[in-house]
Structures are given as C-alpha cells and as structure tokens.
Picture 1 (cartoon, rainbow, N blue to C red):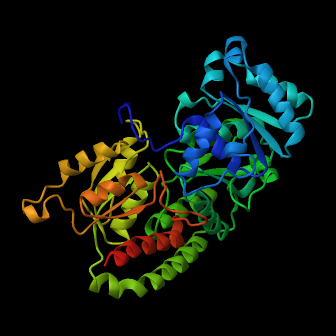
Picture 2 (picture 1 turned 90 degrees about the vertical axis):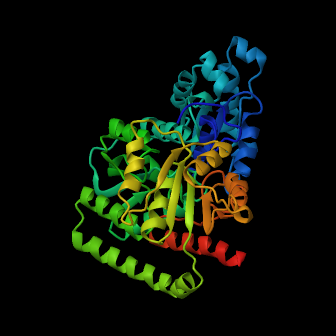
Length: 447
C-alpha cells in the first residue's frame, strides 16, 4: 500500500495505540509526555471508533500528561516530565507506571530513559516507551508497549513451564472485539491444559504479566500484529514464538489449535476430542437456521473490508464455512510487499475455490473505485450500479458505500462507531456463531 494522504484514517497514531494498550493492561497507569491536546484527541477518536470503549482507570481525558509547552520544547521537557511523574506516582494508585512519548519530545530528543532509571533507583515501579505518533499507527504502539514490558518489567526466569503461553496479536482498540476474542481463544487453549497469559482480560493480572517470562511459547494470533513484541520476548527471555492467522470459524480454528498443539507437543487425541466436540456444537446451532438460510435464500455475494487480521479471516469464514461468495477482499492496514503473499495465500487456498480479488487500500473513496473495476456494472437502467444480493462487511466508513451499491452492511472492523461492544467476540467456534447471528440478522431485518 503506497503512502498517501488519507482523509478518514482507520487507525490511531503510535501514541494512541500505546495509550489504549496501556490502559487495557491490569493496574497500569500511563504517563504521557506530550504537548497539550494529544490525550484529548486520542480519547475522542477512541470513543467513537472502538465500539464506545471507555477510558478505563486513568485513561482518556484522565490520563496524566506533562502537557509540555513552548519553553519546554526550546529548553527540553524532561524536568516538566519528572514533576508530572513524581506527582502521578504520589497521587494515583497503580501497580506499574509507563511513560510514553508524543511526537514533539521524540523529535527534540528528551531522554526519558534516564529519568526512568532515576525513579526506579528510588523504588518506583516504572518503565518508559518511545511512542511518538510519527513512528507508525496504533498497531505499532501496541508492539512498542508490549516490547517495553518484555524488556523492562517481565522478570527473567531460568525454567519454563511446558504448557504456559503468552497470547499476542489481538490489539485493544484497533480491534473493537479484542476482549471477547482473547477470552474465547484463552478458553479453547485452556481446555487443552494450556495456561494462558492474555495480558488484557479480567482473568489476567499484573503479577501474571510480570511472571510471563517462564512461558514456553508466545502465540501470535496474527501474522502481522504482535510479531515484534513476540521477538522481544524471545530476545529478552528466550521464549520462542509461532504465528497463526486470526481464527474465525471451525475450519480456521481447527488449524489454529492443531498448530499450537504441535508446538507444545500436546497429544493429538486431546485436540481431536476438543475439535470434534466444538464442531458438533457449532453445527447443532447452525442447523437451526438452515431452513431459513435455504428457503429465504440468505446466501450473498460479499465485499470484505478490514485490517490484515480481519479481512482474510472473515473472507475464509464466509467462503469455506458459511457458503457465501466473497468477490473482493480489501486490506486496510499497511502491509509490506514481503507480507502480501501471506494474505494472498488465504484466498488461493480457499476450499470453496471462490475467485477473490485482493485489494490493498485504506481510503473509503478509493475502495468504491476498486469495486467497479472488478464488478461489472448493470446495463439495465432500473438496476444500474446495484450489487445484489450483496453484503459489505467492513467498518462504519463503508456504510455509505454499501448503501450506494444496494448492499447490506455490518461493521466488524475498525473504526466501529455504529455499534456498542462489550464482551462480543468473533474468534474461534463460538465467536463465528455470533458473526453468523449478526450477518443474518441484518438480512432478516431488511425483509
């Protein structure tokens, strides 16, 4: 994807991703070293693009910040940061404090790490991360924070627990369904006897994160996000890692579970038993709507728009498990040319053999142009430019596009501003049932 101006971005800056990641961690207090306005801008973006995810404890507008001004930029802002850090540690109760920087302190070269070492020597539980927004998007901020934890907070361990893992790759905020997705994958892995450190759920703790250095494996439920953090865990603690595409539906989830089981040398019979049970349960539910699906003709042609986790995962699910016909898959997150084959492989390996056009594009306006490039226009004046029976699965930015081409629409990928998300998730077997409910409910409601 070529770098260009995008009017309606789909991601936070690196600082935004880092701030949401930090506030999603248990008992962690972020301290921003940034100019006035950064925290507020991030929060209002967060509020309307993550399924109305709240600020949490000391996040959003309540996040401590140095709020540096012109004189701090000219003469350096570390003194102001130290004042803010000491005040925060003294007044705000937390288990760990993370200093994270905005663009300006990174540009002028404020040395936050010297201050961190000074405060650590005085007994403060604090680390630092350079997260200037220009370093990348929200996914980059996620990797930076987890890498800082691995390097500066996680306790080195001499021995490893053979069935303990760290689960990475699902990014709070950028994935509005992150909590539900993590819990579903954590539950499945737990049924194989695996102890899971998932960092961001109510089942995780700061002590658990601190002790994550004795894991025997880092599982990255993505081939794009969390990989750098996994490499930092490997570098700092010798923990190997494996990547697996984000799993939605029985086919993808079975592949995910078998890959992890092979890495951890879990007996095949245990995996067979779990997969058989979950697959049977999945089809027990699906068969309940089979009559309506067939009699009311709920099969659809589809356009899938999402990041490098969601777009391939949903495309595979609707093609191989749901029986839909994906026509175009639009990947909205930056993907290097060296990683494009991983995404292209998904559509090449579809069991349904559906021909799918793959597009790398973030701009909502350009997506419509790509669509008409691949989908022939109707010549009948009465039905011109209608994609029917069609469905657009994407973000809330695709609502207008779906309306223009006469297709139904469901928001599942960032930004999510037209849905409220609590514990819903689409990962695994159960998660895919929720996705079926959401997709078919849109169709049924339109009748």
